Every structure is written in structure tokens, then in C-alpha cells.
Image (cartoon, rainbow, N blue to C red; front, side, top):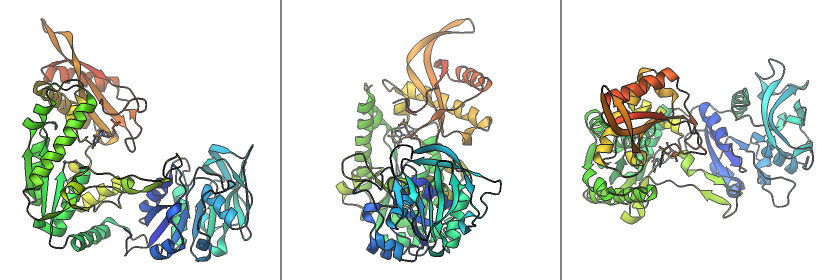
Length: 520
Ligand code: XMP
């Protein structure tokens, strides 16, 4: 859904791995932008969206190949400022009368240094103050002749046309990727570009909140909405935003499957009942879930049982809310971006994300997804704007199947109780040492093995557990967190002393890949 109030920037995606980072950089500048795959963008689309500027992303193809992606030719006649990046630069040169070559010696990957030419360029304000600039290159082809009207403003040893522009038409084209971390001054380039394009930087959370509330009211009218609540940031922010928009027309359903962490269920329920006065069905279904999981040890079987029961239970409770026509979900922007796929199959893959998969169709419900334009950190900012306590907003992610996937092998109540206690001590340690916000996710897994130990004068024969802590940006890849030996030693001692049932503590130092974050 295109924002009708804010200035808009269109990013035409040619399939780069880092296109989303362009959007991140722009959002940091309070600029509203949307990513759309090149196949979908024609002149009509652009006129309807009415962007104030356009960015052409990088991509893996070669403009020298017949049938490779192009921008609509009319784009270059619309008088809009355009920034082409990597493949986007090559598309611009190719379509505007320059030359691009591929083949031996044209590729360049990794760090490079760009030096300025004599000419000055508006989007390079704040660049080259120390002489040269570090940039990140990742291209197979290179521009061998720039298009008429363009000039060169920066060169690198392997890219004589690293920065080019036709300033009179506000066309800019760079060979490197200013959006990545390894181009340290890249954000400045985007800042200069959006300034000269006339963006006001009016994409703020305060404004977004008002806009989202108005849109929810318009969509829902006087109908009722149900919202599945997990206690995670996305569903919490969704619920609070909806409550602000439609008050008592909203009912939340919180399914407690008996696989939550220590005190979690009480905390979630208290937060919503006490602070927001939201109508909440607290469905304690732990008997059901743990009963069905009894004796099951295969990870996929466990996941399937939980997924199916969750839908059944949610539906059972939702059926008690008469007249509900909408289901609210905390779907985020990265889940809905249509990414360009070059890996076979249909050329456009639409990543869709259904927290309660299958339900809307089955129950004949329409979806309300008020966060679908936001990135995760923007959801957190919106949560702050809505007054959610920081302790809630900054929480580590917690998986839907809960402790089930941190309890390899059979799940039993005693094991879950031990796990909950150990996890609470571990997280307490992390908080006490001021490390919680540095870590993407931390938890304990209880292992399906008992080991021999000695405590006081006695022999023990108790469970071993593994501590897990990782750093990550998006959960797709992860590194183990490098705790000090002192921290690990102190934590192991505390867990063994304070948690009956555990007599051995290990630390998991597997990265992802090859491991996964969770144990199952
Ligand atoms: P893995 O274990 O695949 O986890 O490396 C990556 C991230 O996803 C979370 N995760 C889940 N979240 N439902 C969820 O809502 C699930 O079934 C699920 N499985 C894993 C995991 O906690 C980590 O943050």
C-alpha cells in the first residue's frame, strides 16, 4: 500500500542481495520508499506511484546479455532525479547511449578506493574530505563509455567511471554500493541525493502512528478484529496500535501452550490487561499441547503437532467472538517485499508470512497488517511511540514452538521446569553483566542426557544443559557470542547451585551456518 501523504521514493529492484539495505539507509533519513521488482515497474506504474525520485538497484545479470533487465525507457524522460547503483549504473549507461563491457578483467569484488576528479558534484558534498573514499565494489561488467551528457566525478583503479553524473538532468550513477557497511561514507551520498530531490524527511514514527490509525479505522469500520498475541514485539505493537484505533472492537487471543519461559504468561497478560485494558482471552491450553507432545521426540513431528494445535485452539477461541471479520497480524516489510529471483522457477518470489498460517482463508477472515511497511527496528520505534515499556521492546526473539525446540528429545513437565529455571538464571546473569542488548538471542537448551557429578559428599546424576548466545542482524546468519571465561564460569556455577536437576553446563560455540540458532 503506497503512502498517500509522504513524499515517496521508488527503488527498482534488479535483484541485488543488498537492495533492502538501500531502503534501510533511506528510512534512516526519514524518507518513505518502496522496493518493487523491475518486472512490475512500467511507465504507468511510476505515474501512479508518483515518486519524487528513483533508485535503480544492483543486480546479478549483465546488461550485455540479450533479454537482461531494463528500466522503462520513459523513466528517463520524466524529469525525476535518478540514482543508479552498480547494475543500475550499467542500465543507465546502456539505455542512455553509453557502453558496458563484460569479460576478462572487468570484474571487481570487495574493498576499493575512489579518488575525486577536478569537477564538483552536489551529491558528493561531505565526500573526499580526507582525499579518497573507501567503497565496496561487487561487479562483473564495467562501463567502458559513459552516456552523452555524463561526466566522471570519481575513479578507482579498476573502475574509471566509479562516479558519473549528468547533473543538469539530476542523473547519478555509481559503480559501487553506497548502501553497505563497507562504504563507510555511503549514507552521506543518499542524504545528498534525497535532499536535492526535495525530500522533507517527514517519515517519522509520530506521523506514521496517526496515518496507520486512520487507515485501520477506514479498513475495519465498525467490524470486529481478532489478534493472536504471542508476547513478542511484533504482535504486541500490532495489538496496541489496533486498540488505539478501534478500542473495544479488538479482542486478543493469547494461547499459552505450556512451552513459555518462567513468568512469561503472567507478564504478557498483566501488561495487556493492566496497561492497555485490552480485551484478552487467555487460553491456558498447556494440558492439551503437552498431552499431544507426550512421547514425541522427532523435531519435525513436534513442530507439526504444535502448529496444528495452535491453529485449532486459536480458531476455537476466535469462534467465541461474534461478528469478527478481521484477523490482525504483525507482518513486517521484509516479509512482503517481492524479491527478484534469478534462481529458476517463477521469476518473482513473493515471500508471505502468516503467523497463524492458513487461518484467514479457513475462517473467512480478512487481514489487517498495520506493520507491513515497517522494518523490525521501526516496529520497535513505533512501540516506543505507543508507550510500550523498553523491557518489552528490547526482548530477544522467542520462537512460536517455544521451549519445545530447546528440549531435544522427549518433552516432559519436569524437564520443562528445570529448563525454565536454568534459563531464568542465565538471562539474569546476562542482564547483570549489561550484555542483554548486545546479544541477538540467548537461551538454555536442556539436553536429553544425564551425567555424573559430585556435590558436597554426594554423587549426582542429573541433566546437562547448553547455553546459547548469538549475535545476528536478521537471524539468517549468526555468530556465537564471545563471553569471557569468567562470565561462563560464574554462570555455570550459579545454574548448578540454583537449579536442582542440572549438574553440568556447556557453552555452544557453533555459528549459523552450519548450525541453526535453535537446537531443533
Ligand atoms: P534458526 O533456529 O532457524 O532460528 O536458526 C532463526 C530464528 O528464528 C526463530 N525461530 C522461529 N520463530 N517460529 C518462530 O516464530 C518458529 O517455528 C521458529 N523457529 C526458529 C529462532 O528463535 C531464531 O530467532
